[in-house]
Image (cartoon, rainbow, N blue to C red; front, side, top):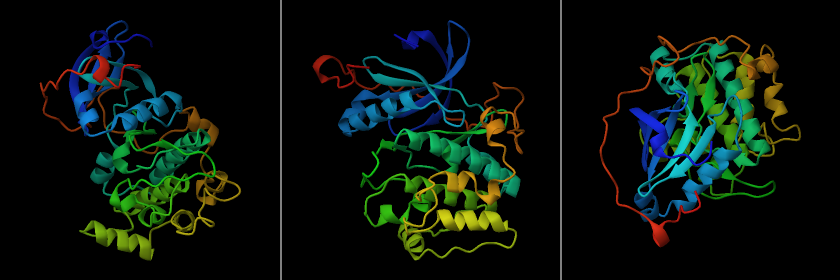
Length: 318
């Protein structure tokens, strides 16, 4: 897509809200295909000094093309907003379905862990770390597959380098982030361990009412496994939730292969999955592919931010 503008889309309901704006359902007028149009307020981004952050998100998303990642279709701007247009993933957040089911079966947990592991493998091949995995950031397709979304905290970190920003959801933060030791790709594999545990059990392994309590539990590293936890899954989760980076799976000599080829995933046909040919063990309840009822109703807003133009516009190159 090139030289897009807001006039190219018929906007419908809001699908979600973020720090700088919202995501709306938008029908591309030329072909009737639906997309998710993310609006972000320029004035707010500039005020909060997040210009590099938003530019980074857009530039990263432009590089990512994978069946298990939400792919960007294009971007544009006007006097008030910058826009990122993404493919639509209509089945709602994995979070919604996990809370409704309370916990997933071993087969379901394995399937979504596999989708996420492949998404991370692709991102890491581009030296992109995601840094914000959680059930809210996996969107469900009508066919039951999941896609990784929200690259707002993602960052390019070259091999051998580290980054030091504290970011992520408290229950999912890796020990090296908390200790400010510098972090890189291994943080994503830690979060995969947390996600897998949360899907199997129904809550993350380190929980407390207070974030400081959560951090203390993460650093203590004690994990309680329920009786129904599959033994191979338990072994993999332990290998992912290893504070020692020289022993954490995903960070060893074999890289992501230690995870992808793990015994727990022996029943996964990776080639079929990447073509959406393996049947998903769960599908979101939907009347049809354009049923958005799995997204919460969000009140609409007519809020128009101040105009940003000319010399004051740091998004001039969009």
